[in-house]
Length: 451
Image 1: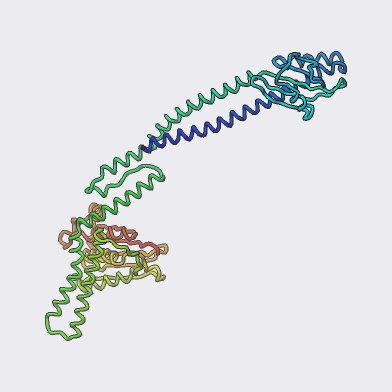
Image 2: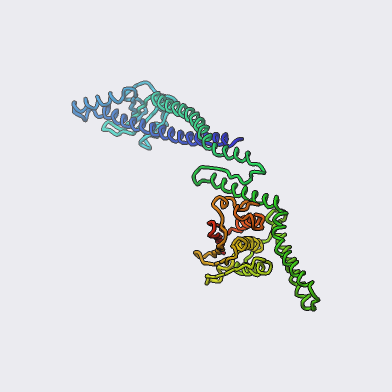
């Protein structure tokens, strides 16, 4: 069953149940209060009947006439009977009533009052003491008016219930259509997404509600899928791009080592360096496979020290760089705890290496400044070069794979490193911002999450 139909049925049922319960309470309350009013009126009429029939000898003529007028006005549809001690009718309507028997009369004499109803009448009886003796006064009135009122109320409630259910059903259909419209729009947008357009986001112009949270979650999922798809699609390019540094180190060490005969200590030293580069290549391969989803990992995020990664990168660049890199590293952080972050240290090292290498590559031989600052108890890393810079047009597309600025065509590069770094920083919750101005340089700001 569709959500729209389910909402309509549930709202209609809810209204029906609530209305029936409320109608029952109203009807029952009206029924009881009406009965109570009738019995109270009958009790007053019993007293009037007693005064009219039994107090004539004790009242003045004027008082008795007044009592007679009140009695006749209130007894228009009622019948009064006054019974003596022998249970015979002494005053009032003389025809016997089979609903008033000896048991009822004795009950009144014992308990002083009684009230009950038959199929067609309401009855009230009271015990009345007079100078002529003890009497039982009974007054009855037909229940036709009472039944007419209660039945009319019942009919009105049934009609209102039916009209209300129909109205609620129609309104629920309309409201559910309005409420479901954003979901329909989202479904249509999702159906339009293909493998080649995973970077598209679901557009939902609504306030901060649960549906907006769902859209945001789905957009985040699409972004992760898009990043994974890009990495898988460019897996070979990423691997070859990241392997060039350790492979250059290996070839450099072996070339130097092969120039002349070496001692056993030198042999062990170069072997250790080459093995270190091989292990580095293995870590890079595993990292890119994890990023691409080609390999799964159940490992939790671990702590790593950011400044140590930067110093390792500095050493690696100086070993392999042919541009005579000038790196100036300044640490303004006094709290050592801020230098630690949690995530995948190997991934972060790859991303930082690409950022710093790009800064060196496009610095035109000037120094690259790396600053570690405390930004509201979060570690901020600022990497600044004073080289070619990036134009505003190129800056919009600089995160795309294989994209290179138009002013760096003469500089060797592939346009891969920055796109990979962007994905890594995003997956490790590192805020990444890049600003640049042509011929003035580029500044990359990284804000690491708190532990």
